[in-house]
Amino acid sequence: MTAKPLFLLTDPAHYEVSYVINPWMAPGEWSRDRARHQAAAREGFLALKVALEAAGAEVRVMKGVAGLPDLVFPANAGIVLDRRVLVARFSCVERQGEEAVFLQEFEQLKREGLFTAVGIFPQGVFQEGAGDCIWDKTRRLFWAGFGQRSVRASLDVIEKFFEVPVVPLELISPRFYHLDVCFLPLAGGEVVYYPPAFSEASRARIRTLVPAELLIEASDGDAAAFSVNAVNFGRSIIMARPPERLKKILEERGYEVTAIDLAPFMMSGGGAYCMTLRLDRSRDVDTPAAGHQIRAAAGAA
Image (cartoon, rainbow, N blue to C red; front, side, top):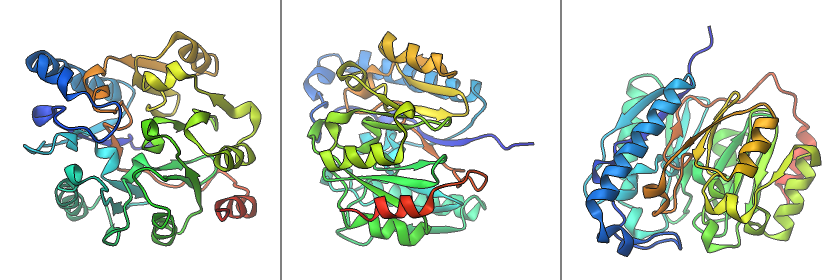
């Protein structure tokens, strides 16, 4: 029997939008109706948890911490593969307090037997977890964003720690500060991406590794709706409410799309993927990959 996917979420009791570290953040709007936004955030969190469980996943919820509102986005906590986790280093001072909290959580998971190794990026080597390093099970590689929050030097650390290919993708827009808001590999081999977020060299690298028939270009509206920032396992996709165009494209390819109102979290620049971290992620040893081609592309600057 196949084990259920396991996701980490953070309780939103201490979530708020109180500072600005990306163009989406709106603390003024939040403060004008704090109680309503907090209630809506709780509803959105519970809807995400229910949707994950309904799709066949298990969910582990960690406690929030006062003063660390973005702890609700555990995708940025670290990179997980094959029972190993590499803990993030945050570039923004406002989030650096999360490092110790997530490290403690991962050490606990190691004691429980879920992880066999817990590492952390060197001081000064900023890398913001699975938000900037996304596993592609079809191609058995990491796509890794750099240029906004994560630095180019972090890619070598990832490759050495996990011993898998890492494909660099340069992010050129502050609005798309993490890879997960503009890039989504799907279980069937498709990749949803928003081209304007990437340098021309990175767009070319994506086109080299992903056949044209498997590339789905997200529109401005798709990206603004945080629909690219989605959770996918099997044929299930869970996302912030998408434009009908994108929903139709995904359903025509055989996916079941569950749309959730995550507006309070979008006010901080996050969606469904940001709010989760898959803890049981492993490489797909049954899927052949063009290793030489992948490594050549990964090594390009």
